[in-house]
Image (cartoon, rainbow, N blue to C red; front, side):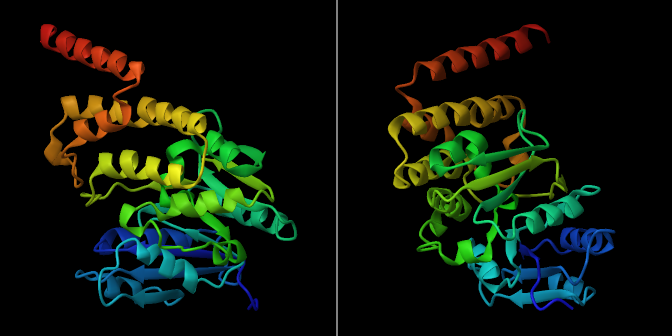
Length: 300
């Protein structure tokens, strides 16, 4: 047994016992899983289902149970319990695609002796299966955009995570990982991002428990502002966010039942307008949306 793990896979969970069971089963049956290199930690956020019984089936899991639901602070707590050289958050809905875990371990080993920080991002846009070397928060944001909000994209050397200041500063905004990533990128010591198709994702029956527009517009943009990013950098990110996230959601909400979602969309239009009212492009998108709705009605 190694004296120190290479990788800590940290799985925060809450009331998803059956999904967690499939996630752990897939992880431990993965041919590239090596118990000498990898530790698996589950931090249960006061689940009321049979999560404890599920975890007992997997003796290699280090299991922690919170006596109360501490919400996103659970992310901080589980990462602080990790002992691996590289620690990463892992949704309780994920499984590695073939060879993805092996490749991740190889890349972690490759960078062990360098001073470069390291991220692994699920593939997006044209950056699939690529390596990007960047310096600073501006370059970081240009490469990853709002995908830094997904917890499964966050990982760091344990030492880098330890050095993050005021880790729970944005806990109430439900985007701790954004602040952490920006602080790491701000160190300016160099950052390597690997983009690839790492994961299969199981969609839970209900997800969320938050107001999607408040979190991913108001809260996200406030964190970018607090990080001291320039006005132009934030405006570019606002456009990307609207084009690739906000607008598709508006289209979706026009044609699907809002009751299908476990998160709230209440006040969404007001939230959007508060951040975007002075941008001409938003009105062009709204015209496109209206035209699409009219054509759908005419074609029925």
